[in-house]
Amino acid sequence: TLTPGTLVQFLIYATLVAGSVAAFSAIWGEVMRAAGATERLVELLNAEDTVADPAPPGAPPSLHGAITFAGVPFNYPARPDVPTLTSVSLSVQPGETVAIVGPSGSGKSTLFQLLLRFYDPHTGRVTLDGTDISELAREELRTAFALVPQEPVIFAASAADNIRFGRPGARDEEVY
Image (tube, rainbow, N blue to C red; front, top):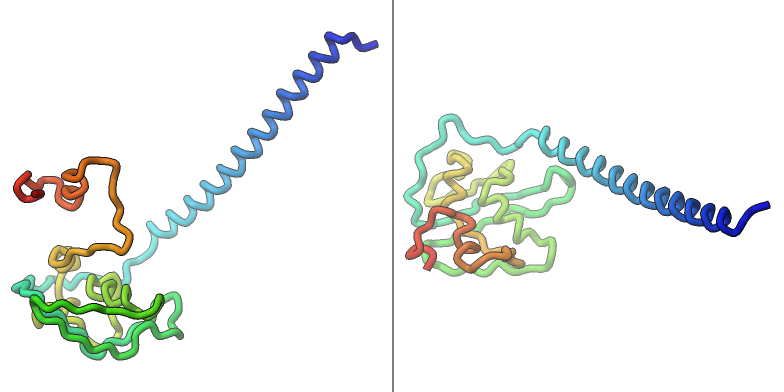
């Protein structure tokens, strides 16, 4: 008793409903992914910083650039039983060029994370111009270093804007 027009109407409605259900399931998947990401972000926001600035922080060093690692071992907090560095001793003098090479996971990046105080070693000392870096405010310490990553990020802007990213108020002469 179905007319051809009613059948076509039914098929159009069925197609619309099926498309809506498919779109809803895709949106629901995105919502669940966003909920998981939000949970991780809240976790990060509530995380306590294990590296603290001294109170009051020491005077900034003279910034000649002498870096010393003296008997520094290190294990990441997530893997306390796996040593990343074992009693590293290293001295770099101002103007000296030093290459740190090794396979992936051998601790090259860890040295820089310790130098910039993303982590503090439990024993040993890291000094900048003879001052233990744990006595310095992290912001003051980090302004003494420039980092060129292995894979630099370039923004969709002019070369000058990319150079100014770290210091937006830089004059044209400084950028040049």
